[in-house]
Image 1 (spheres, rainbow, N blue to C red):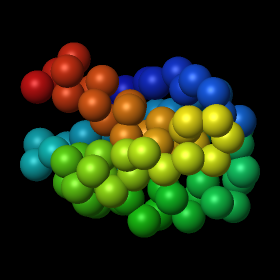
Image 2 (cartoon, rainbow, N blue to C red):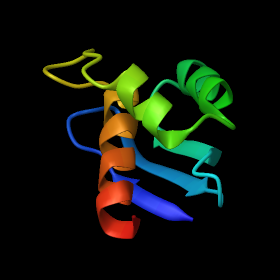
Image 3 (cartoon, rainbow, N blue to C red):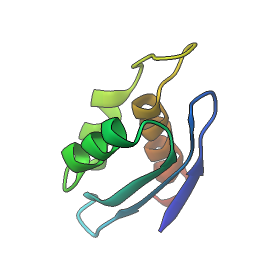
Image 4 (cartoon, rainbow, N blue to C red):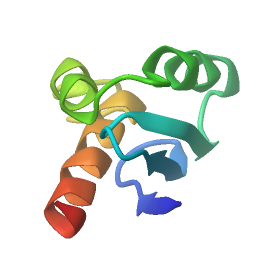
Length: 83
């Protein structure tokens, strides 16, 4: 399980797994807007990390980021750390 601490959002952490085919699994946000983030988690489940990173990058809510944007940053950090 990979853990990412968010910055500038209502959510505080993001947890996720990446399988052997680089597909996202078990995405979970801690904090934030529960219904919206459950929707995000379901929509990204089983998608390739590159696709999700590109789709969510740059979405803004508060300031210059959002929970989806933070997931894209989490994926980017995951890739830098593990690939």
